[in-house]
Length: 126
Image (cartoon, rainbow, N blue to C red; front, side, top):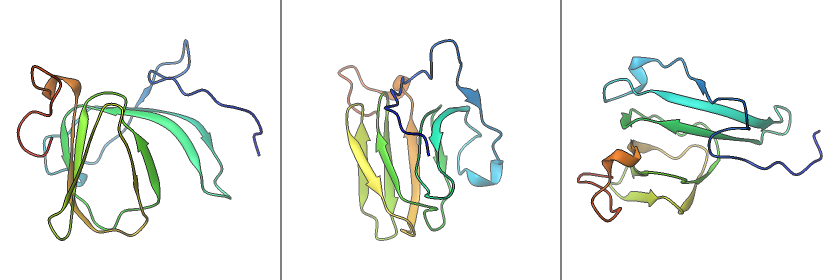
């Protein structure tokens, strides 16, 4: 196991661009977004991983959530709606955690262009 402190940069490591993800249109309730990722660390045996990810505005179709996830929002905002209609929203600087197996009804990720004049989420869930 890697034993070092890992600094995560929101744009990926210096000189290494975030890599585009190959997406399945069936996973989205919106037009297919553009998403990029850099995984800084993954331990497949123990389970944890750490990385940075970005997306253009999108709405994802969900079944049971596929794992535990901690999110620190660097830019933009998102909202996740659970099966009972409750929404969790987060904007830049916020952090949230989702547990394995929850059944969200969907989520909407908004890029920084979907923000109001004062940084507030633009209409809808974001």
